[in-house]
Length: 425
Image (cartoon, rainbow, N blue to C red; front, side, top):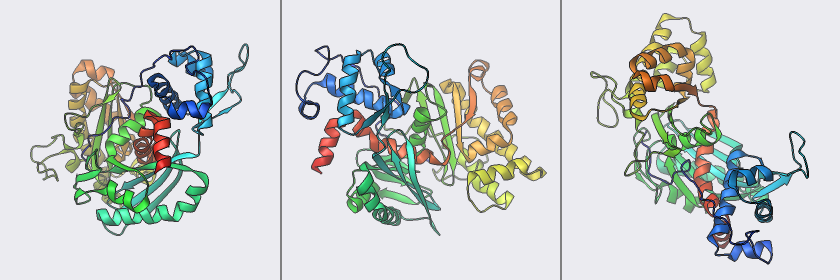
């Protein structure tokens, strides 16, 4: 898998600009002030609050005030603006009783949603995800063969068309995010190369936008997965981690360093699936030999266990239950090559956590002590002593949540400006 250059969601930090007046608003109605105000402080603070509520799913006004440093009056009025825009809603406070007047809880609006597409070699998955990273609907359309870019777009557009009445009645769709197992140009959503899909120079974002009428963006699936886990999953609140995902289309990764996704000069950093692990290895799609994803493969595990794809839970159960020496040997063989790639990453990046996802998570679950021991013995002792290997937690929803973040990014950067542009078409 090849990561794409794009706007980094995990690295997005909105500076807290204190309003010029104590309440940060001046006079006038909520909507007129919000829609036309050129004050960057107000726009940035609206974006900040919406992003915080979206990423944390629920925060009280008191928590928002403490975490931003804005006074309660400013918080109250800014939240009122977001409520008026139907971007958040409030409920009675939950949890322990408070001294003084209770502080309402602020939630992201369930009516603001993004559509997501994840093409793979054996299926196209279409999702509907609301603010807060909640997956509302997921449709997996299995294909009999590897779909072309046009076929993937046609399938996705047809499924979305079938959902249109439900979408129009219940949601405001901010756009579509496409998670592609390949190298993507961020500015135009062109898939430069998706080797496992056989796509080259395919303008999938433009094709889908023309077919659906929704703003559409595309990015690499592993990069989106890394950021989704760093926001909503096992990597939440962690500033230094390595994410590695294994699927039917190979192995991809993402590196979060000091809270930011490493992109490199052109956005292609994090290519862990093409780490060199075997001198006499097989040829790889990238043109080299002995890459990690030529030695560590889901297909080998499925073939060995007599499985025909299916859910990862089924593979995990079969691997853990298997007492056959050949199955155990294959698990240890693949973990051995995985440890080579990970020891290099540990020595170079000094992460606090390595998150394994997809079939790599299943592989680790089958023999965790094997990988832990290899990583500890082969890496430099100092960084090895600081790193933990964890399984990603978002499961099969991961790519949908990550792709939705791609679609939500413009809204979170400038809520009012984006909604105004959306209304103008």
